[in-house]
Length: 138
Ligand SMILES: [Zn+2]
Image (tube, rainbow, N blue to C red; front, side, top):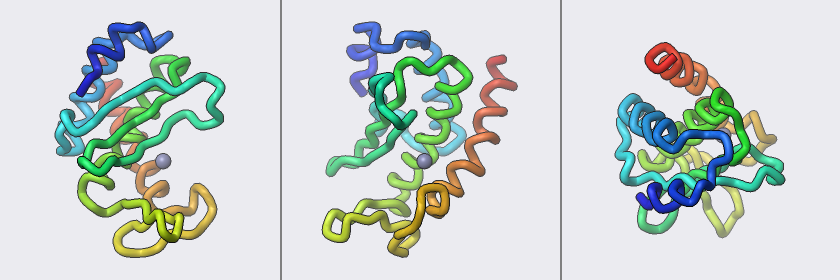
């Protein structure tokens, strides 16, 4: 993790870096994943998407989150992307460059955004994680 370096550069415009760290640790604990396998970097406010997750060849999940999100949305997006991180790290989700499609639970996924099973799972678990976080940390 090179978070300190990134956060030390004031890349987040609205989030306190200590809370980003706290949320990362908390969600990783709930999801039973190693925070050391996650890198988080800010995404331009101009990006049309609020967050992305991808995995590299070394098994490190790169999470990009829009840097201008307020606290509630940031925490929610982080929870969402960490659910994808778990799907990657558990080997359930992967991108197949040859067919330019994702594979989830050994099935080729070729449908509209929102109908993908990994998104349905992320959207169904995300509110549970987010509610638990705000219960715990207000
Ligand atoms: Zn998603």
